Amino acid sequence: MAIGATPGDILKMILRQGLGTVGIGLLASLVAAFAGTRLLADLFYGVTPNDPATYAAVAALLLAVVTLACRIPATRVSPVIALRFE
Image: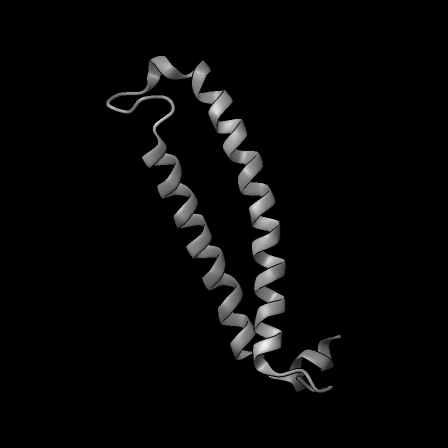
């Protein structure tokens, strides 16, 4: 913002970087969880090993937390303070 970017541009950039990284991690973890639940199927009680509602709820919760974690600092950081620490 100190060199001409709008607050919307900064927010989009930070959200794109944060959600891109989490998206890759989320896909990798869903594949690992899908494979790992086969090994631990005997330990589950009341949930099938490949319950889509559980996977969707965990993914949605993670995306909501990451969105807030990226959005709050992006909207509250002063450009002068950010440049001072760079």
